[in-house]
Amino acid sequence: MDKLGLPIVLLAALWGAVNTTLSFFQMINARRDMMFELIDKCGYCPEQTLGPVEIYLTNLLPLTLGNIIFLYLISYVILSIPRHMKIENDEEARRLKVACNIIAVLPIFGALSFCGGAVFDLMMLIRALK
Image (cartoon, rainbow, N blue to C red; front, side):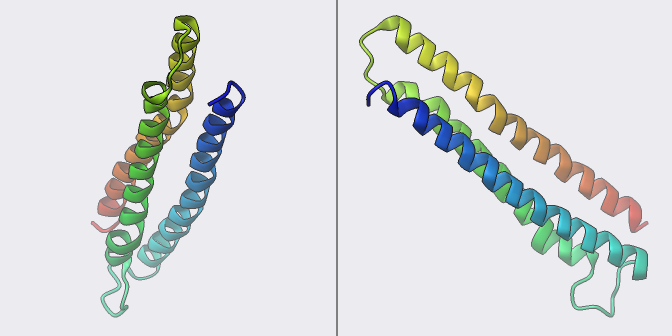
């Protein structure tokens, strides 16, 4: 790959991760709002087909876990790029590795943030239904 192609690949990977994560974030927030509106309205909502617990288990949790897995996969791809590149110049190879490590920080941080958010959502759900 020439010197111009690699930054484009890294930028595309990062853009794809950010774009997908923002879409996941919107869906997760919508499900969270729906879940807590039901809790405020009727608690467990036993008369409803989908109560807050069911929304959490069938919508919010899978979306969050899917996003976490996606972000870790993107991070892995970005971090593995230097292993697959054939660069004779050691200085360029080192700079590529450093750049990939820095670029991978964003999806890794996003995955960790969504992990924290998932734990927080579960704690809030348990507290709200007590």
